[in-house]
Image (cartoon, rainbow, N blue to C red; front, side, top):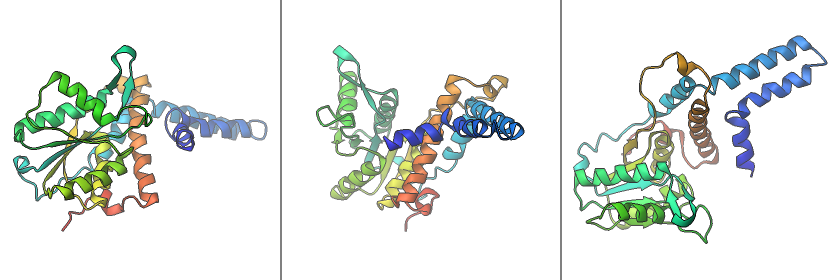
Length: 263
């Protein structure tokens, strides 16, 4: 509940609420100051609802993604790890993976096909909707298997409920299998926080980001507020806040986020 409230206040459109509240506070005391806060409220609401601002924030996250120089050949991989990104109940069809989960899994299987079908895939995602429901890993695995027969079995990690728990569980599986070279698949916005979490557990995977950000040229329309722009800004700020929380909680260190290669 507290997390939801903080997200509401620190992401669009909640970011515009703060100066709006101050505008109301100053309205009877000093209307000039109140108009200033009101203008700031509108400006912030506008900025963080545009695709252009979403692109700026996303680019800052993506540009910090670094790969270990020791992994030069993906075909030498021992494991391919993919983190799920949600699921939903759709009635008679049961549980289906979110678009993000499906995209990540398909990229992982495509990578597997290219580097060698004998390289196992670990799908990490627990019972995020409750213990009475299937895990995200199981839902993703089932939908993939219905559409694409696999030569090698897929390993399901069904305990983790968040990114850091995935890193903890995967670290245990990696050590049990004596794996050394790991390919990590997740969405590009999620990759920086995921890499930091893995590095904090002593792993140094090679990132395989799933592209989700529009890379075309910015046009006039990208500086106008849209629902998609607000969604893009929310996704980027969610990761920024997630990184800040992980750093403050001691889950990751600064060097885990801004890469220093493990010795």
